[in-house]
Amino acid sequence: MKFNLKILPEKGSSWRTFAVFAIACVMGIGFFLMREAEVVSYLSDNPQACVNCHVMTPVYNSWMHSSHREWVSCNGCHVPQDNIFNSYYFKAKDGLYHSAVFTARAEPDVISMREASEEVVQNNCIRCHIQQVTEVKYDGWLDNHKENRTERACWSCHQEVPHGRIHGLSTVKYNIAPLPTDQDEMVVPEWLAKEMEAQ
Image (cartoon, rainbow, N blue to C red; front, side, top):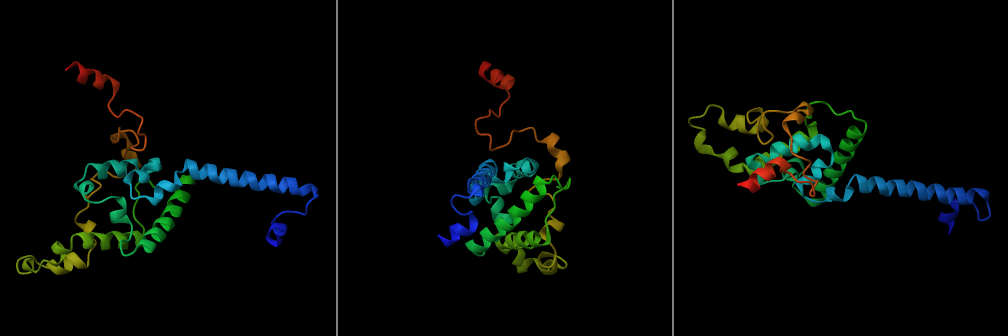
């Protein structure tokens, strides 16, 4: 009751109806925005959640055509895998940053990782490819083998893994596929579907 009195004006006050209406409007707009942003999808491990924002479509499509698609989702590389609490904390922190940048339309042409994300991706590269990183038989005939595999970022050599060589928002013209979250939309153009039926 005391909590209720602090938020709402006293009963009989002319402001009480307005306050209830204003709170209901704010909550309604909040729930509407959460629904439109598909907030619940970000709790999943589904890579299609990453393309709820159209800016990520080229990145998603390049991942779809990579060998990593068969083994790891977006979260497998871009979210810490040490424990579930750290994973969701990092996801929430990164997600809030991304939503603020994309809502303000302040995204750069070429999206690059921030320092915390670079550390996470590097750790996940090593986690999956530990055998290649620690293989001692290469030390005898590859110069600086150990240093190259532990002191440099993996993508300093493997730049095209898994997102290909064409980066940036200007590559949208190379990504003619519809957003993967549009499940009802036919991916095959109508004219091509007719040609396929004819054969």
